[in-house]
Amino acid sequence: MAAAAPLASAPGAAAAGDLAPHELRILVAVDRERGFSAAARALGLTQSAVSHSIRGTERKVGAVLFERGRTGATPTAAGAAAAAHARRVLRLLDTLAAEARGAGRGTVTGPLRIAAFRSAALHLLPPVLARLADRHPGIEAEVYVVRELGAGTAGEVAEGRADVGIATIDAPAALPAGLLGDVLLEEPYALVHPAGHPAPRSLPLVDWHENCGSYTREWWTRQDWIPKATVLTEDDGAVLSMVGRGLGMAIMPALSLADVPDGVTVTDLGRGRPTRSVGYLTTAESAARGAVRALIRELRAATG
Image (cartoon, rainbow, N blue to C red):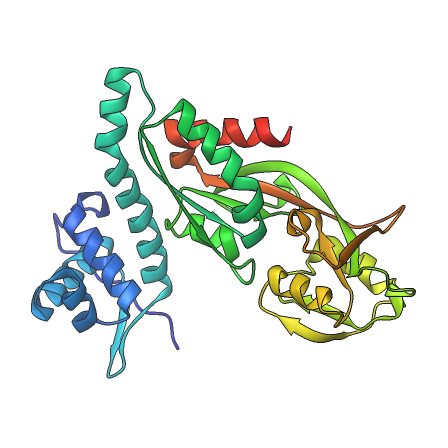
């Protein structure tokens, strides 16, 4: 599809900075729903009101934001970028009042949305959030699980859907553009197999989609004893269950092994074993928020 031509701005037209919050919310709704009618239903507006708002936003921004068609509204490159910025601005507006009231009282308050991959959400975050709640009861934390595939957790932060992401990252220098963050811990991989098996390395491999990233791929390819996976599952919990049933062995990181079921043995892979880096990600604007800073302090204290 050819790139959309920019819209000409009339003399004295409003700048992009003049977009109102209701315009941003409509922009985000159309991007999310992929249609004007669906966005109108979600917002309780008429379709004509949504269409009028998007046309006005496009004039202010100076670019076509959506390709209109029979199947709905597809964001252009400009539209995807605008929607991401809109979500981030709206998130700050949603937290403004709560954080301002807390600052007036000398406390840290407000909503805090955290995206995390499954094993971090299950095993790393609960004690961290318990301490955060003890110290800052006014913080309203919400955690949701994101698969580390494609844009993954980093994408949720960059798109404004999360204030903080707990992600697997190669190095701080390799963070996606526009994001800040740091490594919290290095977790080793281990061999996981049915307890008592005399030759666990001879077993079939059970694996899951998120497992082998760039941090393990080089090591993995050098191991001629690791076969191609015969069972591929959706998450590490299913892998552990299948290994416990004797269906094979697995190569898994430490966070996934925080709650190993009966019948499963974890064996150190020895010198040269692979590791993966787990860290946090946020944006520059979110990093200035008291709730985000408090969470990062607790994460560092728990993993340092």
